[in-house]
Length: 174
Image (tube, rainbow, N blue to C red; front, side, top):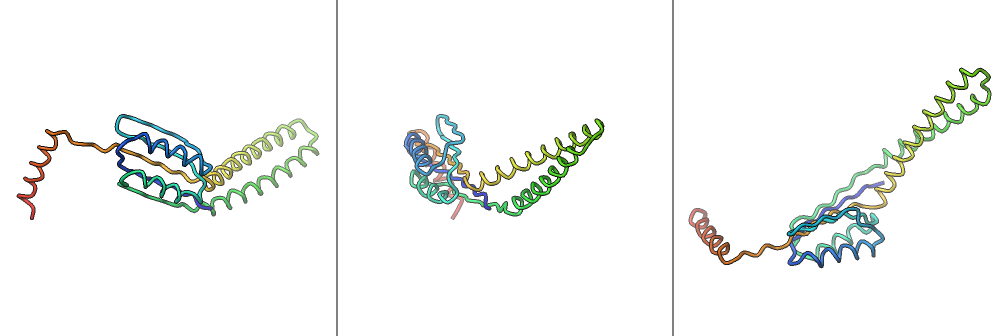
């Protein structure tokens, strides 16, 4: 059970086409947009796509501009999932024993003690089940964060000073 994550940064001429392409691509792959933020010069989109489609999504989004960084990571959570499943089975057996004890309890004090312990065990089972569901969900849907920055074009004054800076730099470096 692998949890995969991808990150992509690219420089683009216009922000609208990459944003539109990100939305259509995510939907076509069976994923969803988890978060999106925009400002004047950049767009960041966090999406979830089916894990086998992560590389397809990265390749497609890479064609939208000049890629400045691309990173993919994987985390193996198999051992954790097996451990959580084993703990759920153990607690389920304990819960079943507590239910049998509750059905045989006669004294009010014993009933309250067993019910309190039963509630604690059921709470632990529910918590572990949510953790297992989360592990399964994150391994089924890969996370992909894409950032598109608008290409900066130098104005005439900036271009002049950039050329002077470049020329000065060449005087000192061979």
